[in-house]
Image 1 (cartoon, helix red, strand yellow):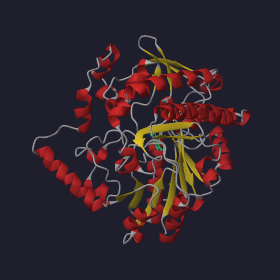
Image 2 (cartoon, helix red, strand yellow; image 1 turned 30 degrees about the vertical axis):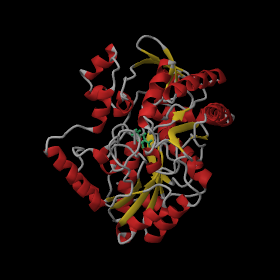
Image 3 (tube, helix red, strand yellow; image 1 turned 60 degrees about the vertical axis):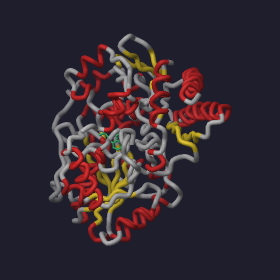
Image 4 (spheres, helix red, strand yellow; image 1 turned 90 degrees about the vertical axis):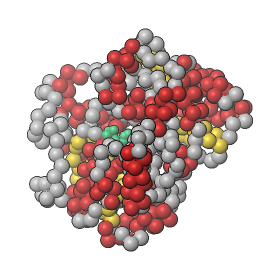
Length: 473
Ligand SMILES: Cc1ncc(COP(=O)(O)O)c(C=O)c1O
């Protein structure tokens, strides 16, 4: 997690221990040391702030709507974007950057694929939101279920956070149990329990003032990814209270971390054995790993699934769904409530149809993405080899990642936290100077899109060559 700068790696945390840690932290804060680790880091930055950043900080909380965007993990600057086209982002001065943030995942086809961005008036003709069930929404659900058969019944929401949060509630209602087991370094959105041990730009584990009640902490157990023994240790004695295991099948929020053979199968087996449900958070992986998502690729069938990001082609739509008997707890069939004004709105549903239409019309896109991402990963490997740097470069489909850490690829959050944050910060800035926009946190990954060309990749590789050499002279 990019912002756990002063936090030692404590990925396997029993709820009682976590509460004790939190109380200790609160005691420190009461003694007057309320400096947050990320603030210490940001102060080291000597970078000047752009006019856009200064203006943003005067009116948006922290200058942004999502903390990672502030650049706090890399000591700034905050990248203020004014426009986008294809593979490029443009800053306030109109400078062009090859963009690998890609909105943190949704933009598999780049910023402005004409199939998604033109003729939007056709989608808006009937208005944006109706507040009633409509045939296109039903057709979208049918299309999704055809590709992800485990989602026998589903419901549309507007964000990945809502999707996972709702799946967790359904799991608890269905099992009539409370405890949720999750994994350090996975990120599931910003609802209360999801933030413990979270990856991405969340930092709740060190934030005594996170606004999350201690009662919530009692019902969460945080295990180590790829470590079934840590799961067993946490489940032992709580078997009859475990409602669900929630997991990113391939993790994209502590850098890229794939599951080791047997890990997800082990979770499936354990969930079934103790009568808990298995929830796959496929908010990143669905459509990035193909129309069947990670679950088709891995052959492990969850009870519930959350999807989002790419499915809207940039528009805010997500969904959760799963076994019909489990989903039947939802009102009006059952006693459990989820709902929302914008859920299943015709505009976003129309966008999701466009995304599926586009993928179905272009089955070659995945091969193209693999090839272009492979070119990037291969180029980085050549640089590291030449410079004698022992960093592992990982690539799967359109995700490319490496960390400033010697040794094999990360398997869990401990590994990810061991990477050199300061090296990443200086590398990030060197890349920015060279017109390449990376995620401003090393917990994220580089997302390649169908808009990235071989020339973009070669420009990026040249920039990496110079930036890495500057970072590690
Ligand atoms: C795996 C995963 N799940 C859930 C979420 C939350 O999605 P959203 O930001 O749409 O609320 C994210 C966001 O990055 C994510 O990566």
